Image (cartoon, rainbow, N blue to C red):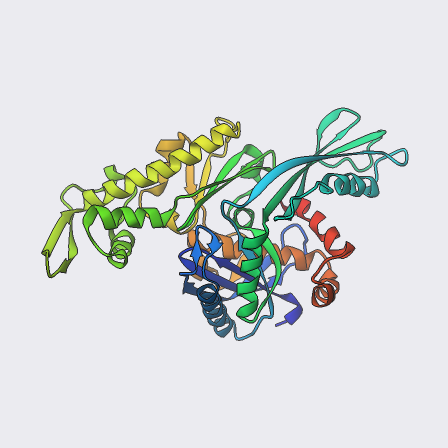
Length: 419
């Protein structure tokens, strides 16, 4: 096992914290594969809707998940790639225009145009997370993906800038540091999941990645191979659970159990004769309900969540443009009937995304939609390792000066290689 090739991904969700330790194999910068060595999970209670609400609790769950993963992998890690998401994430398009220096467009010209686009003023309470070049325009000819070697005098780049709230980012880093690890980089969760579950064809044709977490439901739209829109709906699996609590008069823990064991998100799939035994209480004694009633409660709430996502897609101007349909991922996507309901609401093909591509080792232990983000983070980290022995340089930088400086700036541009 080569310590230089070890990578770790950490997905701190509102319900569970998942840590993955892997080894990168395959040196192709475009598609490095990972060999899974360890997976760890812990319950999270210190997060609300994707934001740290209790540092102590979050630190505890990070430590537990990582220690479990380390035990399984038989090795320890010092630094990791952590996912971040939530309503504080914002994105905007920024343009950069430069005059071409020579006869034909060179890598330097592109770098300059990207620098100009990135130099957008970002409010003091926010930080730039990703700068993703989308397309270039050469002398008014737009929609060019790679202008290197073209003849022209004026080069324009369109860049997708993703910013996050400084305080959620700070608290997330702090929680990881308290657990005894270092955040190598924060990565937007839907982008990480996209690496794990979307195919190149889907991104090309147009696809909506809907990540159904416990606290929020995140949306990422891809079209013509690039990220086009990000959105967050402030409802998720926890809302379904609390509907069950109110609808059936059971405790939070029992509602969670009922949802996992008997839950179905699409009422027509349930056999009307199915009956569920509810946990008995002193006041209510033994109770039985038709399983249809549970499905009805779940169906209503999930329908509402999908409806909000659908409206977001329409507002972004992509209704009817997503030829590859919808890919569902996240913990709540594993429930029976979710794809059927989503297909009804979105009026398009729907599949549940499982991380499977380019994964070796213990891959069967992550074959569930809830592992998409953590696996994607490990794959993102593998891209970083494969993109050069720059790793050593970055490590020195991060150790001394918090990773700022020209070197870290350059790394941001590699994002265009994989989103």
